[in-house]
Amino acid sequence: AGTNIGNAASTPNSTGIWAQTTRTFTVPASGSATINLVTTSAALSGNDFGVDDISFQYDCESYDTVWIAPKSDAQILIDSTSLFACDSLCFTLDNALDSLGLLSYQWVLSDGTIDTSSTFTHCLLDSGNFSGYLLTSSSEGCTDSVALPSMRVGYTRKLDSLVIASNEKYYLNGTWVLDPSAVIGLGAHFEVYPGSQGFDSLYISYGGSGLSEPSIQPNQAAHGWSPVALLFEPQTICAYLYTADGCVDSLCQQIAFYPTVVVPNFFTPNGDMVNDVLEIQSTNADRLVQRVYNRWGQLVFETERPDIFWDGKVEGKPAAAGVYFLELEASNLYTTGQPILQRKAIHLMK
Image (cartoon, rainbow, N blue to C red; front, side):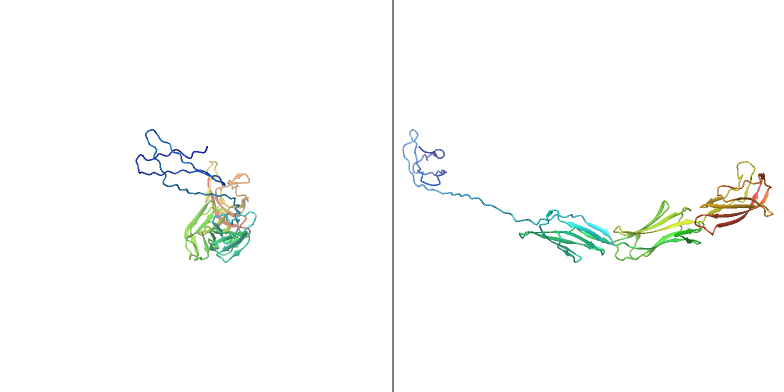
């Protein structure tokens, strides 16, 4: 008894014609094996059968277990976000794939810095563009490298002065006090900076408004506007100089105004509700001294309040029609010792 190897092979139907057939089998790892060739004849086929050649092809395979010990890799993963700051740039970089600190490091910057710490902390103090790279190696000799994120330090172009141009102004306790009737101009002086990356811009804010010049050139040293209409009230004026990089310098200045007064030439205290009082229109007046004299120099009315006015009466009785003389002193926090004085003839008409 044995094992059949494959299916039966057919012989050629013609005499003298040879055919080839192949079978694959596995023999024991040791010992011997016997191959029997058995012919099977169909009816009327005859018994002729011949074997010309028998050959064997061996396919030997052997197996063993191999243990592989990989070397420690030196992979790198750092934040690739570009870094930017004005005037100086301080940063910290580390390798997120080496939390245990098993690798050796070499951080190299274009400013000449070389650092071998696993965590790289550095400050760039000069303006310009910077680059660098990181080399790592493991104890088994594996290496890796990566470029550092791009770095730029912008330069802040400096403002020299904020210009508030006006005649009859004076400086009091850090505040410029202006004459509301004078022409007012605003502007700024700033440094020339040939290293600008493009057009810089100047912006001046005042009250709820502002002035803007978007094309300050590298060799330009000043810019201004005149006249400028300001609200006649205490406020802060600021100048901002922006570089093309986005760096900014600023200067601010407090301003205030003299009081202003407008006095009518006449009034008609006749009870018709029109011009019944000598109304003084004032702005920025915390104190408004009003003294009214008759033609003989006698004081007929006096107050220090800016919201009370002469009603044309003297001691409760209607004053006579005619010419009277008004003396005003308007002051606020910024006119200490220098009140705004005005004297004017007023006609009381009936």
